[in-house]
View 1 (cartoon, rainbow, N blue to C red):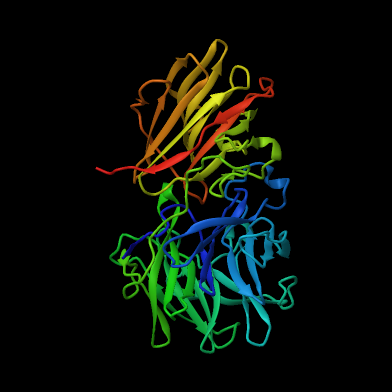
View 2 (tube, rainbow, N blue to C red):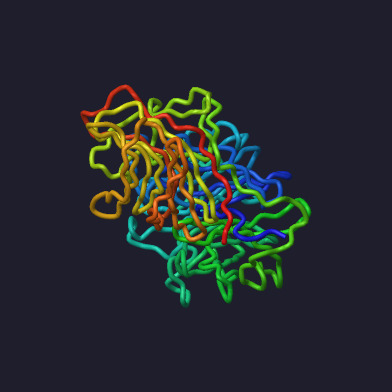
Length: 491
């Protein structure tokens, strides 16, 4: 048996394909860099993070600062003519394309296929006659319209648009439909299929549409909805099949601070239509012939020159932000922190906050910066809390600070004899975080807990940072020890 979610962390807007015996999945990454995570599996329940297709988010200088809610929205991945293709939208700039022969290797630089604001959630389909079509949705925040899907013919090389835009499904004309988005394009048994969710991320459902022409007319059917289950708004995802001919559907469900977690549903065909889950409702557990359920590794021993792929920055990084000397440590440069708000800091090195109980441990030594310099472990969302070191005019303190609005509140502060401390954050299944530290003796647990909250279209993150006010920086840095992420026992 496997249990849903199969990926209990923030992998938003997943799309997946099978090539041979291998499954490949990608997800939205928004403002974070590197972007477009690439995951691999052989059984749909054991996933490894193997790459990021996007080294930097274009336009590169525009994304040198955190653009919360912008960047890479719902992408699609396909395999055609010996290449892997990713088509992704930036709602402020347009639809981009990149490709690779090996998804674990180097991907091409992204190129702009279709410029425009509010173009979202694109997916290509190469037809049997060699022609190619692209379906996409619309973001009302940028385009002024939503709840409709548009198809355009594009070149087979995905380098230009060759046909006019046609609205093929208008949700305003369908009873009860709102926020129709996230389309995925397929062809089966002579029908063109568009799988697309509607009704909103937390309250909606998954529909399937079919037609004899890519331009319609389409008939629709709801194929997955919450029903009597606790799985809210089963949202956009991917239909994949196995080498043995089984059909499965991967989708996300929004869990607030844990983000958009990924579920796996069995799928079958009845009367020419897909039936997903248990009669159209999500399953919580289901048999799988083989495989051990496993999520990507979150610990990082810092034993190599490169960071683990689990990490990302809050904006496009610069090469002098960190140094990994391959000795079990990571040095972060002490960089400017003009307004004191970590939500605006590009150099926070983060990973997703898991949706299940985990303990994060690391250590930090602050070697650089004058009074006001700080470094530590942060749980970051639309509010945040951090524990770590803070340089004062007389020495170094260990502090716990929390920030909602407008300023950081000091929840704990104690002087240290040395600028070194071990740090820990214990996260439970409800994203309640308890911080603790150790400075040569026993662990000191701080009484006040922090309720993590989501970010802008993403879940909360756990991160490392180093910063100082302008004018107090020097050539030093903050040296972090290995990050260990372990399971926590639940009561």
